[in-house]
Amino acid sequence: QVQLQESGPGLVKPSQTLSLTCTVSGGSMTTNGVYWSWIRQSPGKGLEWMGAIDSSGRTYYSPSLRSRTSIYMDTFKKQFTLQLTSVIPEDTAVYYCARDVNVKLTTRSRGSWGQGTQVTVSA
Image (cartoon, rainbow, N blue to C red; front, top):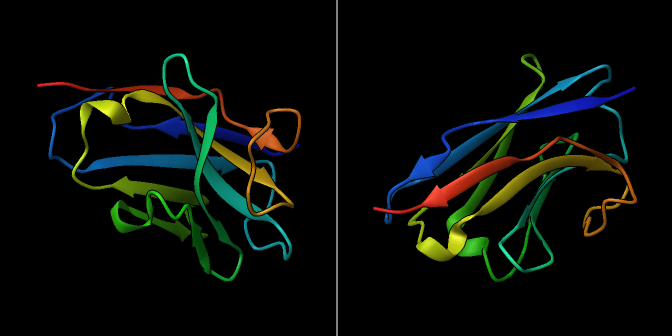
């Protein structure tokens, strides 16, 4: 069974770049038809899909975050990474990494999810 674990800083200052890594265990990152996503949930809001990467390295981004988001993967280390540039306080959220056969994942009833990591953007 695939397991995912997010890691990264819990506090980031405005205008800085947030970098989070998801480490995968118990499965392959090179399986075709599988997407590795980043999703976040801000206080009082629903899940927001940010983007995904597939086994070939092709990336897919939310239009609202495309200009600030990058996702890349290291299949040797079995990790994929989210970078979010020019963060603002509204980027404060719990960030999740996940795996599913759908490129856009917006419900926790599908796929495999990490436990999530809290990120606060504050000076």
